[in-house]
Length: 112
Length: 113
Image (cartoon, rainbow over all chains, first blue to last red; front, side, top):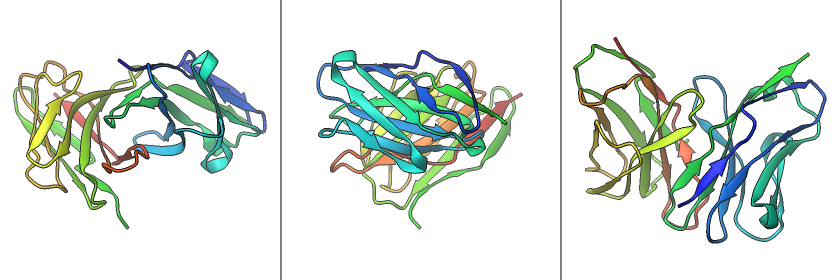
């Protein structure tokens, strides 16, 4: 069975500082990996995805993530956060039967 | 524009009543999913359907029921058997071709009083 761990429940970062959100997954084969963002009371929006190929993937809103097979990780990064990046972020792992398993999420607070 | 519509956005029901949440998509996606979201627990899969007239239980199906009579629609009924139904419910869909992840609706917040 596949699973995802997001070790950080809550992260506070200053506006303009860099951000890194951690994600570790468990899956027997090559995984499909995703990062989603959720604003309060809203649905989830896809930030980026990894299927194969280049292990550094670029997404929307200036986010990127790096797949490291040896560490079973798919960490999300942004070089300079904006106040609008305050939200909850979910990492997900998918299997060939199109089922996604989500982590518990990391809430990001941006301070001025 | 194509997308997933969940309605209503807010729903209040008395304890012991069944309630149905609507999910409609015009993306021509084959598979549809219902998730429940509670604070600090991420998203948990309730039911999913990969084809019309067929659906499977997810991890927390007890107290819920679904139907898939049309490709576009996947309503979720929260029955009186669900012990703690107050939550945020999210519907999602995906195509059966290359897996690009899910498209999500904007959610329904159900409060049972």
